[in-house]
Length: 76
Image (cartoon, rainbow, N blue to C red; front, side, top):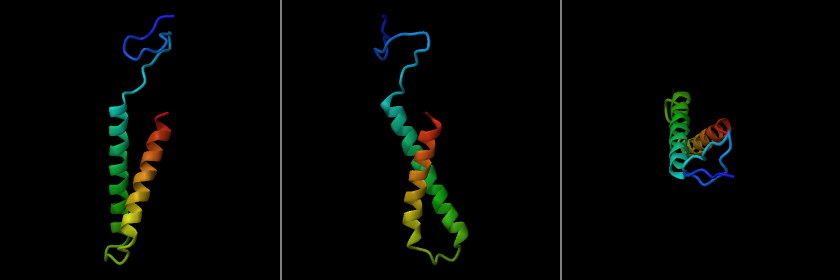
């Protein structure tokens, strides 16, 4: 069977080369940054007086992980 010159996988009619690791890492980082910023913005909108200062870091982490998870789920 023929092999793909780019990824060395089996070359069939439905062959698609896997994404490059650098491109995937960039997607994950950008999704995490966007999710973290959106979560921080949401906390700022809900609490305009800044009383929930301990929640900010947790919101950023949860938002980033949630965005990365959603990005990976929808890009299967």
